[in-house]
Image 1 (cartoon, rainbow, N blue to C red):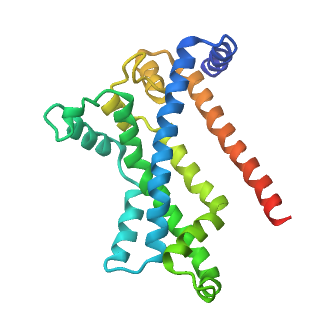
Image 2 (image 1 turned 30 degrees about the vertical axis):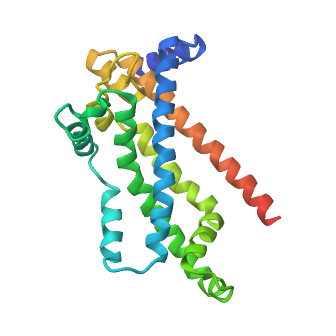
Length: 235
């Protein structure tokens, strides 16, 4: 109980005092996760919708591959990105290793399959419901793709949120490619891992509580926006 109580006190003190170190870590966490989710959304939603609507050889294998990649081991993805970005790797010339850009790349590879797989399921369900209507209006697969993406935008929030949840909680891959460098690549999850290794459990628990609070706040905000938008749309 003493550790939990100390964690609450530490988290409260860090938030109230607007600790500069905490603000820096939180800002970097948001920046990395937001950019990774944005890129994954731009790529994942059209890919998922295309797999749902288009018929092509190997489509079933593509679906199985997308679903399987939802559970990619973060340390394996981190290792692949590390080898690619290392000085002897094919992308080593860009010098991205141990930078926030490397962390964004790792998170992008992890969450894009999640968003694409969930989007495929949403669009496929909508296609079953609206296929006859869209065909009667002369809509081809490409036009139907954009129509269903727009029509299912509220449901697709769930896919994007799932990606954000994975990105914000990721520690293995970002630790490998980011290195947990103070003032450079230290984010919430890697900071928690560091504090645990140092034995500073109250601060680690405090940071964990802040991370959970941020996740709950973002989900609540999106839920509220979705509810408001749905009422406005169907009023």
